[in-house]
Image 1 (cartoon, rainbow, N blue to C red):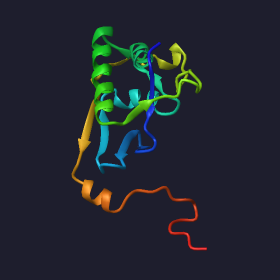
Image 2 (image 1 turned 45 degrees about the vertical axis):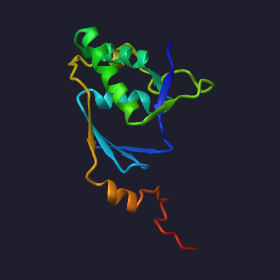
Image 3 (image 1 turned 30 degrees about the vertical axis):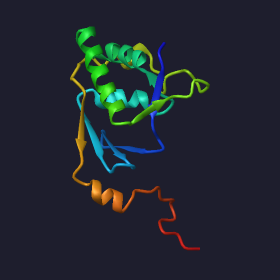
Length: 145
């Protein structure tokens, strides 16, 4: 098994809303969305992380398609995530199981593999950098005591 990677939670904020993953790079103000198998791949990286090989194996089990096409598509998408500095090496001392432990029956959707695509949006960079996103407790923000 190769190097495992996880989301860079120091600089990347992500949320799944109505089945669509929205990601913001807090350092650059760039935000992202996925098409095709992008969400499936992201689900395997978020959490404890996964190696590229684990993701390819899971995608081949989940989708219909030629293994070499799935492997090439997943690898291209994974490289795009790395280029955008969204991933960091996962701590090898952490649990070595993938974040989403699934059986072959759970994975097999029978859906045709659609090439994953990383959509990059820079139109709100200035706004996001001027008014950074921050986590808010249930009491709201600012919470004056």
